[in-house]
Length: 470
Image 1 (tube, rainbow, N blue to C red):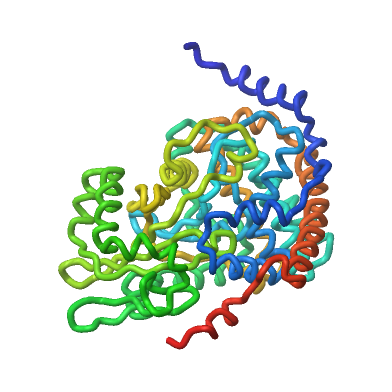
Image 2 (cartoon, rainbow, N blue to C red; image 1 turned 180 degrees about the vertical axis):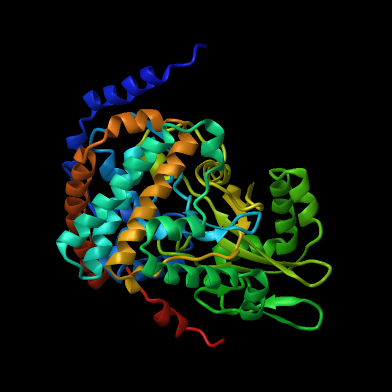
C-alpha cells in the first residue's frame, strides 16, 4: 500500500474540521441522564462492602467526585460530535493521573500513570478530561476564574505546540522521547521553582520496595507477613476482611497459593524470557487485598510480597481490569482480555513502562493485570502548589499528553493540522471546561443528596477503620 505524503496527511487533519469544527468543542451537549444511575452501573460487580467507601471518598469534594466518575464524562462526550481522529487514549487523563516513576534504567521520568480506562477513542476526549479537571481543581483551591482559564489555555496550547514539534519527528525520535525530571524542571518551571521539583526527585528516589517492606510487613522468623491496616489493607480470609461470605468463597475452597500459582503461570507467559528469568529468583511470602484510589475502590486489587535469596523484597500488585468506560461509549475494537488491553495501552502511551507489566485471568473469569506496587513513584500534591507551580504543572500535562498521543498513534501530523497554530481550539476547550465544571458541580449536588437521603451509602476511611481493632 502506498504511504500517504505529509501534505496528504495534513489535508486529512484539516478535513476533520468539516466534520467537527474547532469552535464546536466548547459544547457540552444536551445531557439528559441521571448521574446516580450511571454511578450504580459502574459500581456493579465491585466488592460489596467497599462501595460505600468509594462513595465516601467521592463525597469529599466536586474534585474527588470527578475523579471517581470517568463513566459520566465518557457518556457525556459521546453525546457531541468528535473529530474522528481516533487513537489509543488514556481515557482518564485528569491532572492527578500524571506522575513520576523510575524507568527500567533507574532514570526518573514524568508521564501518564493510570491506564484502567485506556482504549481507542477521539484524541480530544483525553484533553477534555484534563481541561475539566484543571478548572474543577482550581475551583476546589478557591482560585479565580481567570486563573482557571489561564491553566486550560496553558495546557492546551502546550499540547498544540508540542504536537506541532512531534509532527516534524521521525518514528524512532518519537519512540525514544522521554520527559525526564531534569528536562521537566528546566522546561516547565521558572528557575526559582526548580528546587521544589528537585526535592520531589529526592523523595521519589527513596520510595523503593525495601522502604515499603519496613512500613508494610513484619518477619515472624519463618517468612514475611503483611500487616493488616483496614480498610486499606487486609487479608481476605483474615479477621479484618471486608469480603462477604460469598465473595470469599473462592479463597476458602482453594488454597490461595494454588490460585496464585495458576494465575502466575499464565502471567509469566505474557512476559519476555529475561523477565521470567528475573522473577524466578523470588518466592511468595504473603498476599493481601489493597483498596486503591478513588474511582477504583471496590475493584479487586491484591498485593503480593515476594523476596529473593538475599531477602530483598518485590511487591507485585495484581489489579482487576474491568471494561473501559471509553469502549462503552465509543465504538472500539473488540477486546479479548481487559488486562491485556491495560498493559498494551500503557506500553503504547508511556515513554517507558514497568518491566513487570503482564496479565492473567483470575477466579470467576475476572481479568487482571500485574505491575510493581511502587517503584520510586511520585505524585503531585497540587493543593500545596502556588500559581506558578500550577501553571508549570498544566504545561507539563499538556506536553505529556501530546507525547503519549503522538507516540501511540503516529498521527501527530493529522492532529497538529487539525488544531492549527492559533488559539481557536484552546479557547473552545476553555469554554467546554468551564461549562463541564458547572455540570460536575450539579452532578455532585445530586450525588450528595442521594448520600444524605440514604439512597446511596457513603462511609469515610476513618469511619470504616473504627470498625476494626488491629
